[in-house]
Length: 296
Image (cartoon, rainbow, N blue to C red; front, side, top):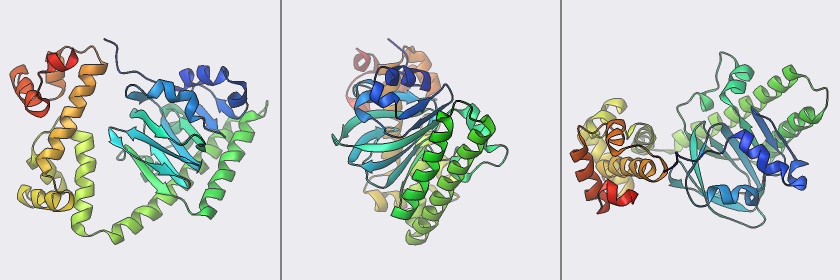
């Protein structure tokens, strides 16, 4: 059984180079990709049948149509004016898209990100978010598109300066961070304290579910009691906090079983179960099958 499939920039370049029309509207290197016309159809076959790991961070702005992928195991839908961020090592799977979907994209390796940003990291990209979505006003969409176009044109010059490239990448990222900060402030103002706690809880579960299976851990991180957290989550979602934790955990186990060759004993250790018997009982309660049956 193979490891979880990846689609890095080198592999993406090989796909694009096989399509002359697409290659003419994109710049792709080992550390940076700037796409003036994202072709969903070109990579659909790479994403449609199983989750795919994206080693580099990705930004997409939808300019026409819509797309409905599965991002980090959550179903999403993006329409015209939406900006989508997927952090490094995010998991993406194709689900559905309009035939005329079109957009602009940017992909950056961690190495180039560090060179472009330096020591002061924008909060939107400091690692606490695995992904996010912003709906852009027309003026912001136009401004971001012009920054993106400037970067693309510079990269297409045969004698383009690497320092100019880094500064243009930095400017684009800082502008996205500015837009994200504006939206976050608005969202926070419009949310009740309970809604904010639920949002923060879901983010923590997405990050820590493989290692931490108890409500007490998440309540401690949020500085509230487990009982209050249980009440807030139930009121906000209609589901218990433990259900959210268990479903996130079983999803991660399924991915390891289906898309890696890890022995079940190693999955047990990675997912912080005391022994394989505990893992098997948990997985069978959640799915009706043992891990071995599910893998087969």
